[in-house]
Image (cartoon, rainbow, N blue to C red; front, side, top):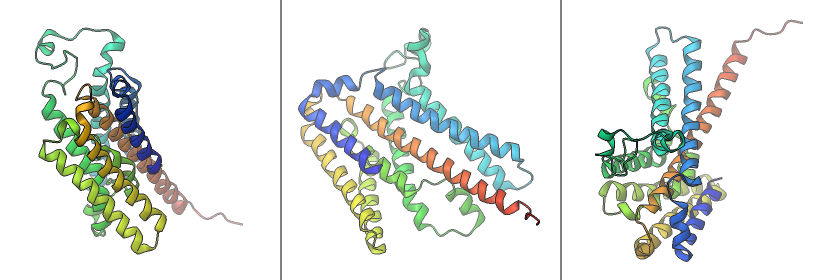
Length: 280
C-alpha cells in the first residue's frame, strides 16, 4: 500500500512537470482531491467516535488510565471532525449559505472557516503537527521502552510504522512553505525516519521492507528536489498544498483504520479469554 501511495505522489509530480495547468485544475476548490481529503479525515473521526462510544458503554470506573484513553479517543474524534469540516468550509458551498460579514472581512478567501483567517499560521501548525505525528511518532513507538502503564496508555495511540510509510509523500509537496523552518524540519525528519526504518529492517533481515523504506526515502528527496528546482512552473503556488493535505489525510485515514483493527483484535482476544470454558 505504501508503495502505491508513493507511486501516486510520483505520478502527481509527473503531471506537474508535463502539464502544469492540469496540476492546477486538480487542486481547485471542491475538486475530487479536496473532497477525498475531507472524507478520509471525517472517516477517521468516525472510527475514533466509535471507539469512544464503545469505551463509554463498557464503563470507565475509577481507573484513571481508562478515563485518559477515553478522553484521547474523544479528542481525536473531535480534532479530525474539525479538520475535515474545515477542509470543505463546513459544507458551505453545498448548503449554499453566505459567509457572515464579520468572518468574510477577516477570512482570506471569504469562506466560512477558521483556518483561512490566519492561513500561514494555521497551515504551518497543521503541516508541522501532522508531519511529526504521522512520521516521527511511529519511530518513537518502536524505540520508547514499554512497560509502565502510563507510557503504554500513550503508546497505544501512537501510529504504527506502516502509517509513517503511507504518509511519506507528505514530505514532498512543500514548495510554497519551504522557507519556513518547521516545514523544512518535518521534511528532514521524514527522510531520517525512512532511513532509520530501512536500516532496522535490514538488520532484521527483512530485505523487502528495507527496500520499501529506501524507495520512500529516495521518493522524498527526489520529489522535494524537483519542486525546489522547478517550482516556478507552478501556475498557483498554493496548488502543492492541496496535494500535501491529501497525503496527510491518507495518513490520518490509515492511522485510524489500523488502530481500529488493532483495537477490535484486542477486544476479541479479551472477550475470548474471559469466556467460561465449554463443559462436555
